Image (cartoon, rainbow, N blue to C red; front, top):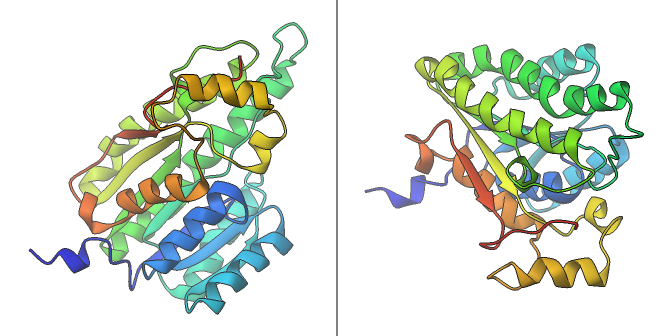
Length: 258
């Protein structure tokens, strides 16, 4: 067995949406460290450039792209620019996402806000997979990694839009695995628990953290590299017979805001 090749991404090209900060930044750095050329697509171009420069300083290959995943022209432009820069697409990490976790009071949440969460978390993922899949098939190697969440299976108040959108990601992942499998493309998802990012920091209090850790066997919150490691597994040849799966990365427990 050639174990050295199992996590080798040399010659592979990866697109990471929301790749400039937090979990996305961790994924960008992780895949680049294992040899992939990475395209960091983010709404914040300056932050994407900073992450790309860090990767280049470490000897990796990276390109920053401004991208609003709610704009179809940005998605098609992202794919075209990746092909122009690197000639192929092998890996797609649909990391971008958002919602009012813990702040989605159904008495005040509007239909437009609910729909926006699905457009951001689900529709953009589906569309980018549709755009990338033909190029993955041509390249002879394809792995799509969607970003789910523990909220997709947890039950908590004031999170109905975000949680249901992430549950949709789980089922969409399983079904797309059937659609794209014959083309040699694997489709999986990673479901983070509570990870120390700017987004979590905006709602985290010492009391909430203490409650989270009461139900977490590994007594700490997650770090971006914990999630990036799971993404690396799905992106790499070691998982070549794994598709349609959701891997929850949560310290063995459940972390909720209530």
